Length: 211
Image (cartoon, rainbow, N blue to C red; front, side):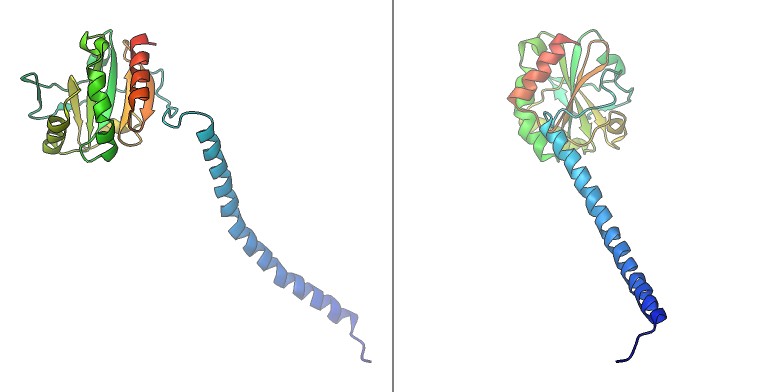
């Protein structure tokens, strides 16, 4: 029986370990993204289970609404008069304001629109205690006007944000979104997604509370 030299055995073991090491590193490279994804998914699920997903935390809550310059929606009328735009001065007049971000091309905006029309008919809004205004996001004037003419115009003022810069200032994720602005011009609440009867009622109650 031939004997194997000790040196060859050691070299063979070293060569075997050197061959295994890259495979281990390769496996780790593939595992790291999976672990990161799993961690992010866990955080997301915890966030969903912790409360209403439509009530997204915002760094602007409790702070003055960002100053924006908007133009009026050309050709839009209400009660036979042109509908004006709105600005910061209109949001700090001593009454609360509900600001709805919408677009004619937004399917969920059509879903929520009947609830906005009903909101505009609420006694507090009709009495002038709460204003409902619209921020038209990245839309064509003709399409936005046709949208409101067909479905009804719940807004006392509509500001046009064609390039989307104002929405960025307000931290808008997408459309529709709705903000409650206090009498002093501070953002009280932000709702992401289409309104329904419950959420519209909650936002109106918050606006009437004014704090």
